[in-house]
Image (cartoon, rainbow, N blue to C red; front, side):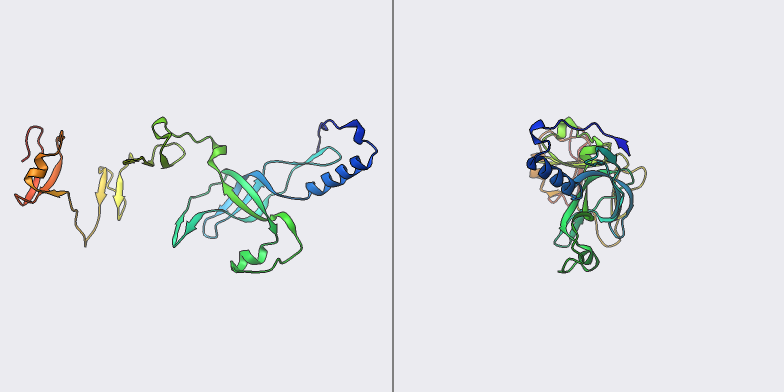
Amino acid sequence: MTDYAPPSRNPADNDTLTGLLKLVLTKALQNTADMLPAQVIAYDRTSNRAQVQPLIAVVTTANQVVQRAQVASVPVFQYGGGGFVLSFPVMTGDTGWIKANDRDISLFKQTTAASSPNTARLHDFADAMFFPDTLLNGVTIATEDAANAVLQNFAGTVKVALWSDLIKILAPKGVGINGTPDANAILDLQSTTQAFLPPRMTTVEKLAIPSPKIGMTVYDTTELGLSTYNGSAWS
C-alpha cells in the first residue's frame, strides 16, 4: 500500500454531521463494485470465462491505495441470439470493462436458468461480466471506412467492410470457401457436390456491360458457353 494525496475537503464539513455522513458513505461505496476498466489475465474459450485484473485501485478513507484482487471465472460478453453468435478469441493482455451485477448470480452461471441469489452479496465483482473493448487498445479504422461497418483484425490487414452499396474484402492470403485457400489463390472454392455458377446473360446483355475489363467472364446463354473479354472484344 502506498500513500495517496487526499483530495481537498470542504472545511465546513469537518467535525459536522455532514462530514460524518460523507465519511460513512465513502466507506460504503469503497465496498460496492460497479464498473471499471480491466485486463485479461487468462481466458478459456470453451467455457467463455476469463480471469481479469481490475485496473483501478481502491483508495481508502485513510488515503491508502490498495490494489484490487484479480477476479476469476468471469463470463465474457458475446453477441448472440437466434442460433448465431459473434465470437472473438479473447487474449491475455486484452482490455475491457468489468461490470458487477446487482445480485449474486453464482447459481445462474451454473444453470443459466431462473434462480434466486445464492447469498446476500450485492454489487460485487464476483458476480461480474467482462466486456472486451478495443477502444482501450487504440485500434485504428482506415479513413476510407470511417462511415462504414467494419470487421477487421487489430492491424487492419484483414477486413470485411460494408459500404452503402458494396462489400469490400481485404484478405492478402486469399479467401477459402469450404476450406483453407491454396497459397497461390485469391479465391479457392472447394466442393465435391456443387459447382461454380458464373453470371449468366444473353449476348445482347453481355455487350451492354459498360467499360468491360480484360479477363471479365460470363456464361453467354445465347452462344451456350463461357465468354471472356480480351481487351477489345468478347470471345
